[in-house]
Length: 247
Image 1 (tube, one colour):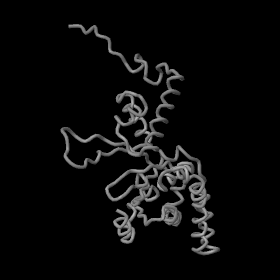
Image 2 (cartoon, helix red, strand yellow):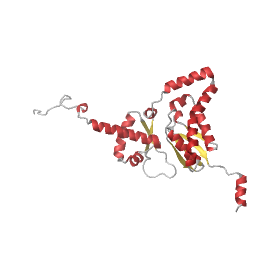
Image 3 (cartoon, helix red, strand yellow):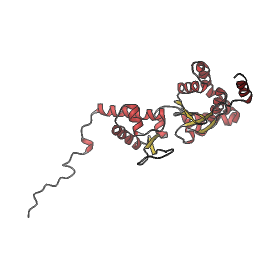
Image 4 (tube, helix red, strand yellow):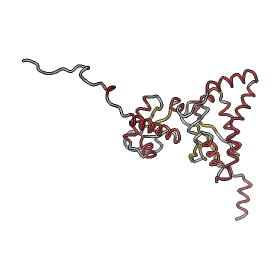
């Protein structure tokens, strides 16, 4: 029996690369991906549903952009940590920015800064690096002093001061106090080489908040968010006694 079927070769089929591409659609997709990345930068690790609600997109559209961002190396994902009783089904996946993803949001001369600090350490010693790090956070302290009267608490004023300087900060309440979260660090790559920058920042937080603080995580060390624990104010015994006496 004669086979009259036609066998198509690769030359007979139009390759995907030759399909018409709408430049306007490509530009729109790139803009949406930037919005997705920026939302993760601002709010920290997020699920597809979180992003869909924030950006007024469908979860399916968000997942399509997440897939592209992961393929570009700008995002990574992991299962969401579940605290307390777990519902049915698998935990959702949360998406976080990689170093490459963060690098899309700022153009710091990291290598030059690292070389300059290394040179400073060689010619002037460790103390000079510490003084430089202290000087870097002075602009945050100045902003804090300028706005602290406009906010109910010093921690809220510090959030505004940090965000104004590009650190994209927020407060997350916990049982023992609040956690000060910074979702972006403009000097993360430099701080990875010179932790004096993070140490000076932590000391400045303690001064501004007039409280002991504890650094729990930093972007410079590979964590997704810089996190600082600020405990509830301690009520002194004399304050407690005075309060009872006035009742």
